[in-house]
Length: 374
Image 1 (spheres, rainbow, N blue to C red):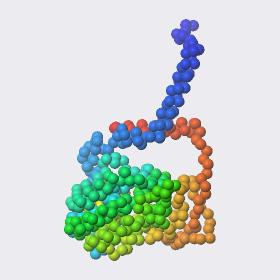
Image 2: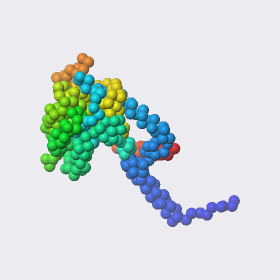
Image 3: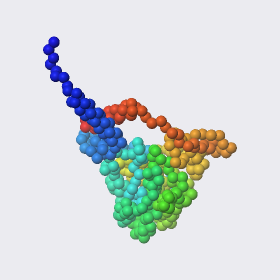
Image 4: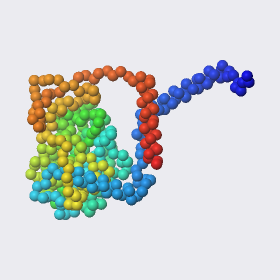
């Protein structure tokens, strides 16, 4: 029988085996790196493309119009004394550090894609016919640009600082703002998302003694801090019409809304890239806010049993135990205090499980790239 293949010499076989092993290791390491930094790579290479970058412009425009309408109608009207809304004057003063640093969405899976497409509050309001006090906007913008140099403390990797504490210069603009308009809008924002509980004590400090900017000892992140309350009370005394925008997807403690100086309040959650246009439509009377709160917002967040389940926890660390104390909370349900148990040691994934996970992840990324380019 004639042989058409030359026998492979032993040294070449060993060299080939070494090369194949090295390539396999390189492939595994490369996939692990891609898996770890997939979102960063996709963002840098603009793989998560917006429809405006390659699609029918009419479809994109129609999608924006629908999003704007949904965002506006989904807003919850928390308060509207004496028909303060809609506004009768299109000139408004907008206060709060968050006015130039909106929380557009949550973190993790709740984050928004294409941050460069997010409209500012000013852009959205002006697009819908409202006029913004430029002096106030420029002041907060300048403060926002300086914030990068502030030495801030961020527990759990989240930014829970109250930067209004560093914006005391805004009080020098009150007289000018009063002349511009007697209507004041103030924005209170709260960020956060999966993977980290919100601070239960805003007075927390690290080992060096550094703490949160504007944080009050004993107060939770879901409460207004003293710097925010000072600004709110000063605005109430200066302006005849005060409107609060609650820019938070978390159930903030909203007891302050009962103050007589607040005329109207809207819960706008995370508005997304163009959702502030929907908010502007409510202010000018184009859209009727028809949203409802998805849960009871307590006057005191500590009245909720789940409050005592918070802390430096992992997803598997929660355990409910019986206690001699009970809390009464909404709809006649008694719930025991819950406590935490120490984190359990988790068995590491096997090599086969890791390989299977990497293959699934690569297939998902490839599918996303294909759909984006299609």
